[in-house]
Length: 272
Image (cartoon, rainbow, N blue to C red):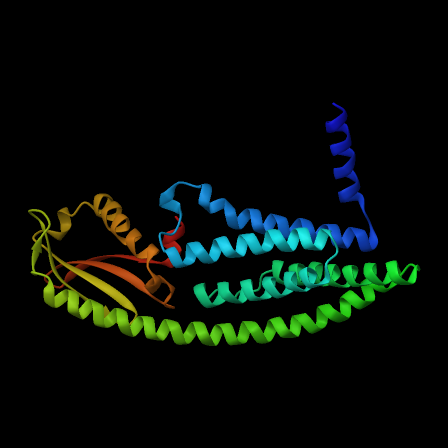
């Protein structure tokens, strides 16, 4: 009970700390949570974790670095405080490069501001120990100056990341188009699915992959059944990079003469 009481008192003090110590504690806590969230996927079912060994090694490295940074910030080591903001900006830019996500995220300025406060707080804490005077009044002013500078750096990083993502996606799309052409040549089309439906062809149309089926009787096609089947088939595209291509969709087109019925899916359907 004595140990639990002291632990509770310690945690209360940790979160109630204000000014310089509060900023340091917040920076250490955010870094620890980031490390924990990076480690968390490794404890989920294997189906939810990437099988790519490269990404696995990178994520383990990032998680360990955030843990080291968290401890370093708590011990008021300046290099760790600077690494926190550096890793945060690099990590967010890496996400943009990987996913192409560029919509404004409130966590971006908040994260940058908190880590700027941490950097300044660690520096002021060191000066306080040397000079023996309180420098808490400088925390917000200095943190805001650093925040403006880091926002400009982050903005430049986002712009560069978007350009890199565009370049990678264009290359990816070109490779995917070639792969579809090769796959079509290898496939023994047409492929009979059931007594009513036959896969006749698949090809690229603008930014869409079209799966074209011929039906003997389009009116008797079970829409609910084929919606489930086509959406289930589409899910396999959610795990490949081509889903990142802007405007990419998969169209399942069922035809009978001039009549047709289509089921269309895009990246938004990966979330459902």
